[in-house]
Amino acid sequence: DAGVIQSPRHEVTEMGQEVTLRCKPISGHDYLFWYRQTMMRGLELLIYFNNNVPIDDSGMPEDRFSAKMPNASFSTLKIQPSEPRDSAVYFCASSSRTGFLGGRGTGELFFGEGSRLTVL
Amino acid sequence: GESVGLHLPTLSVQEGDNSIINCAYSNSASDYFIWYKQESGKGPQFIIDIRSNMDKRQGQRVTVLLNKTVKHLSLQIAATQPGDSAVYFCAEEYSSASKIIFGSGTRLSIRP
Image (cartoon, rainbow over all chains, first blue to last red; front, side):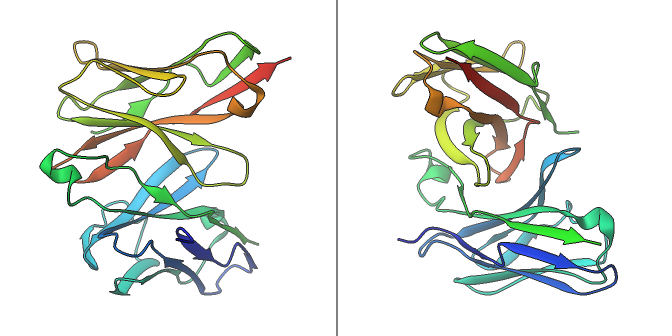
């Protein structure tokens, strides 16, 4: 398996522009997470999905951020309009939790390599 | 609220020595903990996990200790190698909620 695939790896945009980050989770995983990493705030959970349904979006900073998961193999995180303070590395992670939630196996997250966003 | 923090932001260790990275968590309802390693330019990678019904778990060169009384977690790396240089994160989870919260990270550097 190729692992979690994120695109683009790097994005530089100007304030006010729309940004769309994409994620392809590992096939068969039933959970998908979006995290944002900055020096000041570390790794912050933005939102996560279970079987394509958003479960908890309490970490989404504000209405400018939205995330979708139209099917089991694709998710997007959109920022519109973008602001300089959105500059960060955005990670997508997926996990298979069927056994874990029953007390077996691990609940490890498999991370992509991240999308580094710079908003000028 | 839920939070995970680290006592030491940086740790410098002589190659071959053992490393101990500490973590404090605040949510007493958390029942699952994982240590991740993040190398420069990459996403975090799983190292070892522990459930709250255990107080120690060993892997290859790594041991995780959990003290629920004081809500403390530690990662011990035996015979530290140059390849261990990275940022280490602890993460906590209340598994029924599947909401995984990461600590602020400790950078481990290895002296030759």
